[in-house]
Length: 112
Length: 114
Image (cartoon, rainbow over all chains, first blue to last red; front, side, top):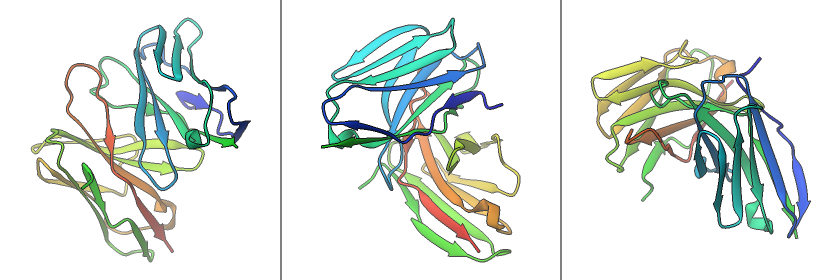
């Protein structure tokens, strides 16, 4: 069983809808949680970063962490066609020397 | 110019050939990483280096070797390529400041082994 599970999609939504993405994990020692966005033929880029539990908001993006359930989420409000990409969750422990564990990525398609 | 540059971007080779993927960065970061991306498996760490004299194996290092020629250069070698090494390879860097370890990725090198 992988440490980080993520539904690969694809997830297709109409423009303006809310996109909801999530990951589950098994290692309770994970403390740092990130979401990366990857456009086709590009490298991943950091979208959101959260330490421990709670919510974080940045513009149209909200990241949530529920450590009791080992579950993290990313919400994209007012989705745009430019949000079409693959979204990868990633996480690490405090003693992992910076080595991230990634989910498989969810492909999102926002249709005009 | 990109902060993290990978060459070549695409490579097709045959089983048994030696292949080198190169990575250079202008971020001034000490930490460099090689990841492999396969459909359905996400990104998996092959090797990482925290400075020029420090090389460490990652999750899937078998069949690969690396060289950290300078702070800015980190190359990945496949001594004898095999078809299941067909994948998208990413180099990444981080400054290791604090606990965030935010990674900056290159655009990737797509390798096909026939």
